[in-house]
Structure formats: C-alpha cells, structure tokens
Image (cartoon, rainbow, N blue to C red):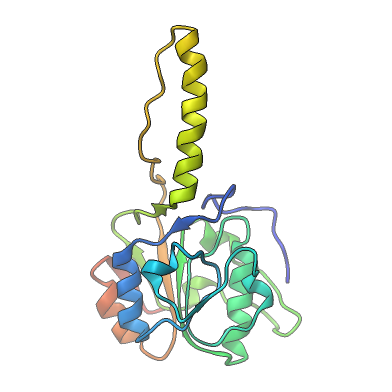
Length: 206
C-alpha cells in the first residue's frame, strides 16, 4: 500500500474518538447489520455493536474483512484503511460498507493511491457520499478523557502554587472542519434517504 505523510486531524495521538450513536444507527439502518468494525475499541463497540471488531492491538489492516463493514478510521492511518477497504471491496470480500470521514481534507488525501492488486484506488467521492450540514460530534473515549483531565489536574497543581488562574476541566473542543460519510453497497437510494437527514447526499459514480 502507498503510504502518505499527510495525517488526518482525527486524533493523531490516539484512535479513541468514537462515532456518535445517531450516525451508527443510521449506518445500521442502511447496512441492515454491522458484521465488522475493523478499527475499533471495546468501549466504542457498545454503541456500534459489530458482530466482530478489531482493536488497535489486533491491527485490522492485517486481518480478514467480511460482510457489512462500519469504519471510523484512526488518524494517521486513514490512507492505509481506505486502501484496505478498497481491496476488500474490489475482491468482493465485503458486501457493503459505511466509511466515516473525519475531515473533508481526506478527500484530497485519499486520491492517487495505488495497490499491487488494483490498477488504481477509487476516491470516496466516486461512491455515494453525504456531507453533513453540521459537524459530527465525535465522542471522546472514557480513557482519553481521564488522561486529559489528569494532565489538567497536574498542570493546575503548579498553577495553584504560583497563584495563577486554574485551567478549567471541560469537554474537548469539536473540530472546526467539515466531515463526510461514504457508502459502498447495493442500496444507494436507501443511503440517500437515511443520511439525507444529516445533510446533502450525492450519488457518486458507482
């Protein structure tokens, strides 16, 4: 797989940003069920409820993909996971998929990749795609939040000794850039109907 130095802004220091439940349920409605989430976490799967998921340690890039796939790729590995998805799709290893794109920048990043088994790799915009009218409110994992608050508490101990204003604990800011959702599968009309509730849907070239 061709690698890129351009990393997604999606949690480059941690993969533990989860897709909110409303988008997961919409994906489940389109797919019928979620057989595999190849880039997930036990906490995230409480919402996704995939029949099988691969954690960061298990490395979903190197494991089999089958059935109906839901994927919110980790930052820094977005091109690798997109290429893996394309390979599974063109080899007909999977039936359908919903890909959650963290930023519109990915649509530039994911152009021009090559695989040994394919003459070219399709871009997300060549498939049915939804551009939400509002940014997706990704969910910070419990562990990531705990570590972030711990770092703030440690910083505030020093600030308190120096008589400085304390840094408040608050929810992590959501990204300022737009997101997208891409669909691979036999039911583009269903995707358009369900995800049309989130924003504009274009059918793509597939």
